Image (cartoon, rainbow, N blue to C red; front, side, top):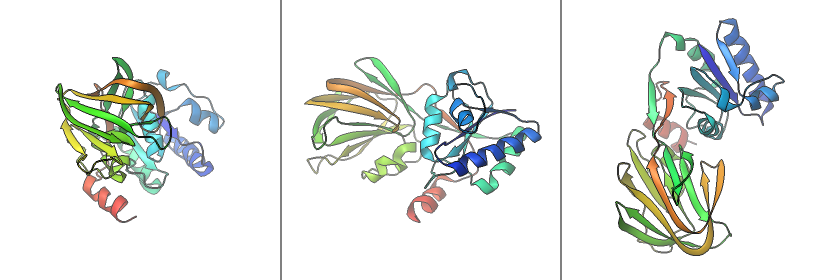
Length: 270
C-alpha cells in the first residue's frame, strides 16, 4: 500500500512525529511518499502534489492542513487526519492511536464522501472548497450588496459585511461562528450565511445542491473571494458567482467517529 504522508511544517514536534510514523510504516513494508513541503522540512526529497500517486493520504495537523491537502490533490484519495491542531474537527485520530489504525488499513476500510463546492466567476473556474468560500469586501469596514439567485429566481437581496457559502462539512467551521446551523455532512446542500447583515430578515439558507445557485454582486466596492481560508481571488465590484456541487467529493477514511459525537466532544466541551 502506498501512503502519502503530509505534515504541518510550522511545528517541530509534528515533524518529529512525521519521521516516527514514516519509519514505523516503512519497517512494516508500507511505501511512504512525502509531499515536497513535508519532505523538505525533515531533510528528505518528495514530489509535488500534482505528481503524487498514492492509495491513501495520512495528514498530521489540524483542519487547515487537511483542507490544504484536499485542495492540492490532483485526484481525491481516501484520507485520514491525525490531530495536531487545536480542535481538529476533520482529524479523526489522535497521535497515540494513529499507528495502530494505519497498520490495519490493508485489511480493508470504509470511506465517507464529503461534498465539495466548485466556484465560477463570470464562467471562469476559481477553485473548489471542502469547507466554505467567503465573499468579503477588499476594503475593511465596508458593506457589500448581494442577490442570491436560485433556479433563476431571486431568493434574497441584502447588504452585509460578507457572505459565506458553506458545505455541510463546513457548517461546523466559520459558518457556525457566523450564526449558521450545524448540518449533517451526509446532506447534499449549500449553506448560505450572511456576515453581519444590515437587516434582521437576512437569515441563513440551506439549498439543495441540485438547484442552480448564483450570487450576484451589486456593489460598487471591490470584493475578494476566499476558498477554504487558503486561496484568495479578486472579484472586482460586479459579476456573478456560480456555485455548483464539485464533481469529485473529498473522501475520508471512516475511523468510526460519529459526527454528532464529535460535535459534542470537540465543540460543546471546549
